[in-house]
Image (cartoon, rainbow, N blue to C red; front, side, top):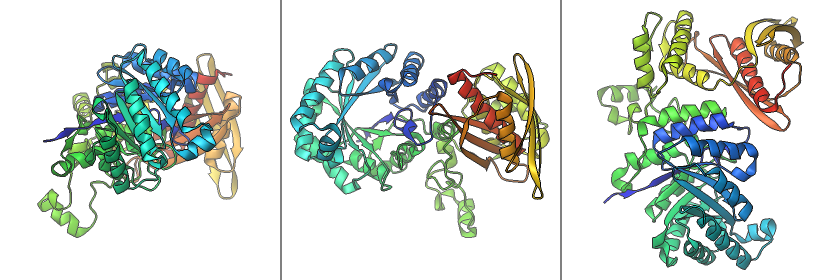
Length: 505
C-alpha cells in the first residue's frame, strides 16, 4: 500500500532567504501561481512580521491563489501570530506555522531561556494561533541537535495545544540519513498523541544530504516534506522539491510513497524560479539541469538510441523538459501559440500577440528558435515591471587601445533623455551612462551573463543585482546582442527600484 506525502513548498519564505535574492510582491505572486499549478499541497508564502513587503506579499497570495493551503511563518509570540493571522485573512485554506528553537545551544546563546520556559512559550503560541485558524504547524528549530526526550515532551504539548502538524527540522544540515530517520522514528514511537498530527521534515543541505535525509524521514513515518524549487535557501539551500518528488516517483516500488505533484510542470517551475530569483540552475543539477538528459559519450548515445532505459531512468517529458528545435521565421501564429501551450503556459490573447511579435523579431536574427528561446521570451515578458524608463537606443565604442565610451537614450512618459559616459570596459561604460541618465547613483552588487542556448546566434541572458537603500533589486534582459541584454537588465532593475523607492528624474 502506498502512502500519500504532502509537499510543503517554502520557496517564497526559506528559499527567498538565499543571499542576493529579493522578490517583490508581484514576483512572489507569479511563483505562487506556478506552484499551485504544480499542485504542491502547501505554499509557505512568507514571514508577515518580517517586513511590510512580506506582509503585503502574503496577503496578496492568500487572496488570489486558491486550491492550495497558504501558510505564514510566525515566531512563538502573539505579535507574529497576529500578523500572520491578518495576512492570511483571505486565504481559502490558511495555516499558521509557528516555531521556537529547542537545542541547548540555541537556548543558551540565542534565546537565553530554560527548557521549561521554551516549552511554555511553544504551548502558549500554538494555543493562541489555534483561536484564529484550525490548521497550525509547530516547528522545533534545530531539532536534529536537540535532546530527543525533550523534543517528545515539547511535541506532545504542542499537539495537546492544537497543532495539526509537527515539523522536525534539520536546521543547520547537520544530520545524516540513518540518524535523521532514527529521530523521526523515535518521535513517532514516543509522542503519545502523535496520531493526532502529521509529522513533517524540513532539511537543509549543508552537507549535501537534504534530499537523502528527507527520504529517510519518509521511510520512518514523516507524511509531509518541506522543500524548495531548485533547492534554494540559506547557506547551501534546502531539500530540492524536484529531486525529492522524482525520487519518490522513479523508485515508487522502493519508497511506496506518492505525491500529488504534476511532474510535467517541474521544469517550467524550475526555470520560472531561476529567472525571478536570479539564481541560475547548474547544468549538472539533477532532474532540471541542462545536462540532466544529455548524453555525450558514444557508448551512451548508442544505448539510448536503441532503448532510452539503458541510460535514462526518467525521460524529459516526465518533468516537462524538451530541447527540440521547434520553430523558425516562417512559422505562423497558430504554431507559436500551440507551442506556448505545450510548454505549459496559459497566457491571455494580448500577451501571446506581443510575444509572437517578439518571436518573429528573434527568428529574423536567429537561424532556428529553440524551446529555451521561447521560454526566455515568456519569462522576460512576465518579469517586466511598470516601465518608468524605456531603453530606446544604445551605442558602445571599445577597444584594447582606447577608453570605452557609451551613450544611451531612455524614454519616460515626460520625454526622452540621452547621456554618455566612459568606463573601464563596454559594460561598465554602458551602466554608467544609464545611471547618469536617470540622475541617481546605485551600487552594482553582481552581474552575470550566460547563453540561453548554444550556437553563435544564441540568445544572451544578462542578470544584474543593484543595491539601493539596503535593498537589492534584480534585473534581467535578453537579446542576441549581449551588450543590449546587459542594458535591458540594468534598466529593468532600475525600474523595479523606482517602483519601490519612488525616484524619478
